[in-house]
Length: 271
Ligand SMILES: NC(=O)c1ccc[n+]([C@@H]2O[C@H](COP(=O)([O-])OP(=O)(O)OC[C@H]3O[C@@H](n4cnc5c(N)ncnc54)[C@H](OP(=O)(O)O)[C@@H]3O)[C@@H](O)[C@H]2O)c1
Image 1 (tube, rainbow, N blue to C red):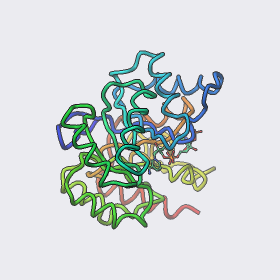
Image 2 (cartoon, rainbow, N blue to C red):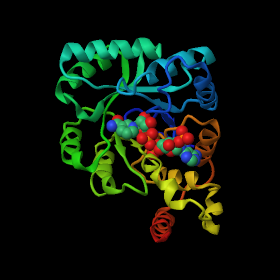
Image 3 (cartoon, rainbow, N blue to C red):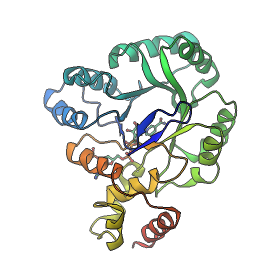
Image 4 (spheres, helix red, strand yellow):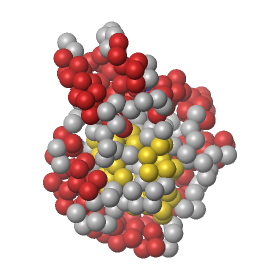
């Protein structure tokens, strides 16, 4: 299943992968093996990284090169520093680590020095060094600042936290992004794994299979990507079985508004 990126209509698969913590394994060959298998399962999906994530960019870049997957993934990373020159240096390093000539998406991480980096990114977009530009955040305490940035109408993408465990962005932020024609990437789709602790040992509702939902991961992800403003979700995983499971949420029927409400209330009622 794909959704169109509003700025261009380009189709983007609704499930991608995040690399925070999971891909930060350095040169450890054994630890890289499952990550290679995670990447092998992808096709056109977004992979999201950041210079903040230790060795993750380098590990992803090496493995993508080994698998010959450059050109068949949607590569997203971030800038996370202060100052124009430091930002440029950091982004150049990300290009080298991820081994790309052109980045699909470059985002300002947590709005750090956002005005400075946005100027650089707008130039780089004109020069076709980056295809899309965006901003990210992960906590509702920053939503006022996020909203101010969105309203400058300079970005193609917003990456924000959204899950059954963290729903505050649906009050304003998601609608604002949608009305301004921005794609939305949902980060922390499992609230960093907390959602699985709540459903441990609990059976899925019987009706979930009507939507092709075969696991709690798919339940959580389908709820997210069926929001009309959301383009995709980027669950973090270093486990190929989990990646396969997560990709399953990109197939079959999507819940409608009534089904989404039911999914949320049944989740809330779990004890
Ligand atoms: N400010 C920002 O820009 C920002 C902030 C936060 C996150 N992000 C991005 O969003 C991505 C996702 O967020 P996150 O990694 O913090 O949290 P998350 O995706 O909500 O949760 C990750 C956890 O879920 C587990 N998991 C994944 N798939 C599973 C499955 N099918 N079944 C059971 N467990 C599963 C993972 O363990 P396993 O490895 O064992 O699968 C991991 O412990 C990050 O990797 C990063 O790329 C960006």
